[in-house]
Image: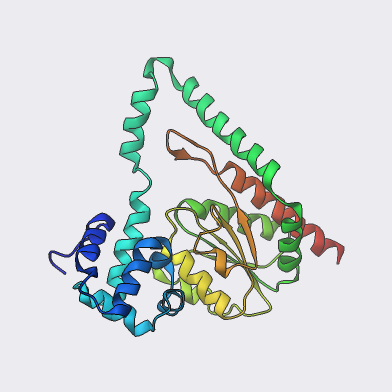
Length: 274
């Protein structure tokens, strides 16, 4: 793949340059890919083909027409676009230095993060529908085992839920994906279980993949994410949309933690009452 685009803008330029000479179906895929990049990033070939109204094999032909070995190689470029949408930590610190006077000390930083946390919690309080919490708690309370999926910045939420549920004597399976054994850790999940999947922009492929696998096994998935367009949305039985306010592009998990605590206790109450 030497010389092929590795970022979305370069890929977009290449696709537009070649689109006019493509057969009708490949041009159809090109148009869909450029107008729905998030769906291309995390959808399966079957899902994407259905939405683009083509056969799955057409997606492979499209990728190879652009010079990629297969469709998964093309998807990697779309996934990198999501990562590029959020600044890395060095860029965040540089932006912070421009807006924050270091001589003001750490107190100003604390004020900023407390303010962001308060805004996140206030938004959660105003926008969260308690009926969704009840619906999710009912599903989780009936589950034999609750599987918890969260990687990267979502992992602390998954591990907290594992801790809280264990204290409430509720059986859980925390999927760590250590040594890439996530699928094996979820191997025994079935329809009598449930799962909580947590992922935020840029969405973690491991989490999306595991949630897809469990949903295909008829395991009800409770999703915590940041957008109705999240790849977790179509996989979920109950979708919690949580938007965390950032400070200087640093995002805490204040609202997500609060929701996780609420959900854990609500499940515990239902188990205790039954």
